[in-house]
Image 1: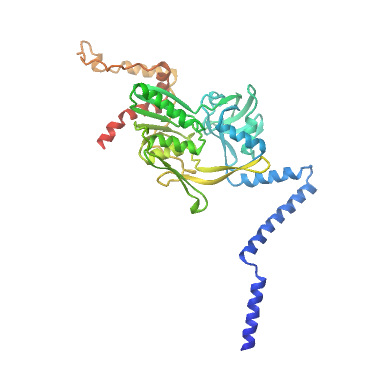
Image 2: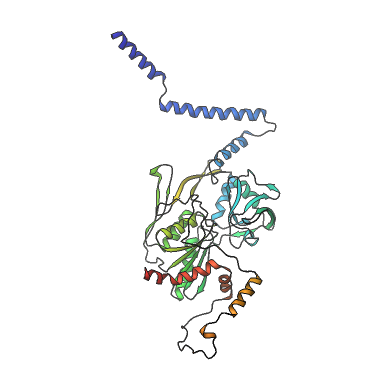
Length: 430
């Protein structure tokens, strides 16, 4: 019996000595993966038909690894790293589009307003098949950006398939200087302000706040139409601070990484200068990332009515990490969630009122509609009708021609204006 126990003890000790623990097994696994990579690297260097430097092979390997993760992770060379910082500051040369990769296809997320791409008729959702005659199949996102950007005044030819088209068409766009103008404002009617945010850069919140304050100096702010259509996003902190202008408190957004402890909340704060006027927010499929954060926060807090079409659904967080040699990587590290816990990623924000954009009618249709108006009668059209003795409101001004033209051509904007005027009455009924 003693001999059996002794043998069993020896066997157990032997097993403990020769069996690698979890840490050793993991190290062996890592070593095996690196050994395999080194073997392939040596084979390519030795046998590949062309000479390629080891530095180039390693960079290409890193690119491939990151690009296989998702459409937004990528390797940034030293030049790419400098280039990516231009999108939030100053101005840059190009055509003015935000692009993404979707199942290997190069897709336009949104054209930036008043840029060469916007004026050339490039739209959100367009697929780019070729850049200057070169196929975009298997192209990387950064390579696509490099090919599309270029010196001012030079043309780039894009083969584009529009959403509603059957075959691609060639569009020549002349590159220009793309200014980062992120906020535009205009009076729609007396007391009703139109705010258009084209993207979220360093100056978006202060510029938006200035536009609101300048308008409110001279008159009472009765309502805002906040236009986030075709806004491809930008800086997370700007999305939070823009939302904070309209929210008295509560959560704006939270991001969640791989592990539970990696959650980070971004709250709004109660400020004495919070804007309390009613809001209707316009969104569409070109509203992405930071735009979706703002729209989702305003919707969850019931602070704004959302009108338009479902947003793009870009709900992932990319962290740009510098490397020691001046290069860097852009890595997806978390997902965005609205205050109510809705994931934006691949889901998007659904508007409260789904109203598709209807392009202005053709000349023939416009003439027909005018003809119909001629046969529409009201009391005021009848001969010898009684006049209303109540005089028009004081200080009422006619809107300028540009605003009138905007409203005539944009059915979503027209409806948003009518709704923001009625929101106080709707809330009273509720």
